[in-house]
Length: 177
Image (tube, rainbow, N blue to C red; front, side, top):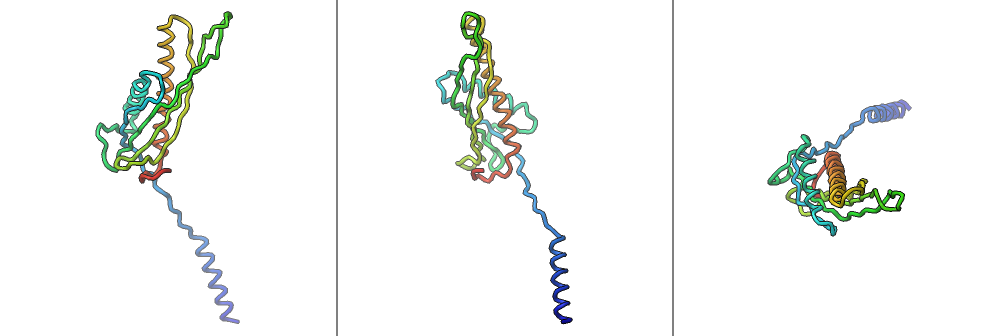
């Protein structure tokens, strides 16, 4: 009986000790510092949208102190941002008394691939859709400038989100997340 009580006490003591000491492992996020912006692919019939998006990407990443934009990718450090503009559409949302469209909603969808330099497959692929509005009153040249400004604003929003997604990225080992 004495031996049984002792074994029971040791068993309880073992459970208490193992239950009280927990080891927590925290996965360390790999911080993205270096990015390389690949040329924007235009998959739309809209001419020049790739130029507007490239300008917005450059402005977003070059002015963001959290990233170093590499002119030449560094192996195992640089994340390649490969954007493509998939679609752009506009439809009227505002009309005047003569039933003429005076305001449009413009929607742009882009696909972003994040690839660690040295790997072929992206570790993350995502689509971002954003929209904006522009006024369609004035001369045709003025309306076209308003439309272009709307596209530029949408592109800036998209690349700001890409920057945020890069920072929340976690481990980049060349596999899809």
